Length: 89
Image (cartoon, rainbow, N blue to C red; front, top):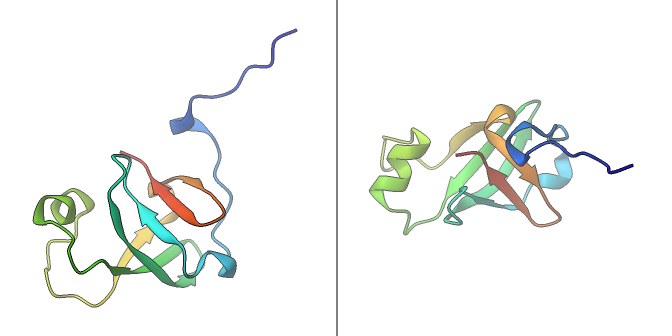
């Protein structure tokens, strides 16, 4: 019997935990976008990387350039590893 796994985009991702604070947030393309500063239920508050390009900001819906913090909902997350949070496309 062969174990079947779901494609990455449909796998269940665990809920955010306080231990996720300090992790790097990475896009599906591998771009580092910032660091999680605070977790609030299903929302991660992310401090953006200073050198984040305008096109990456736009893809994430972060149109306001000079905000100190942005939010990412749990539904945008594809995977949470030991030191990174990977976003869906």
